Image (cartoon, rainbow, N blue to C red; front, side, top):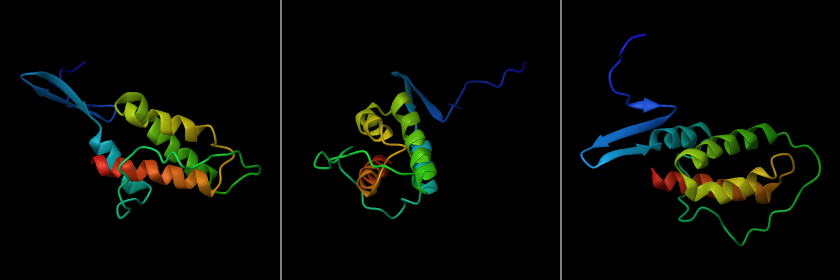
Length: 119
């Protein structure tokens, strides 16, 4: 084994040391998600979820299911590690990974635009 010094980034989590202690950040990971899914030019959402949206199961298989699942998994990683503020929204949307429609996409879009606003 080789000593490589103090850890700076581990598992997409940046460690920021100061005299007050250690802080963690995933801003770089959020920026990557925004870019990967094409949200660089989208409007920013001020909240994590639009409570006026009623989500319901949709039957049938969608071509966009893979993309929806990829976005959900990326957001779940953030929610589980450092962004507990999006946990409710992401867990609610994850329930519909196999049966979603435009309403679900709109709600997912909302969360991504919220995340864009924190960067």
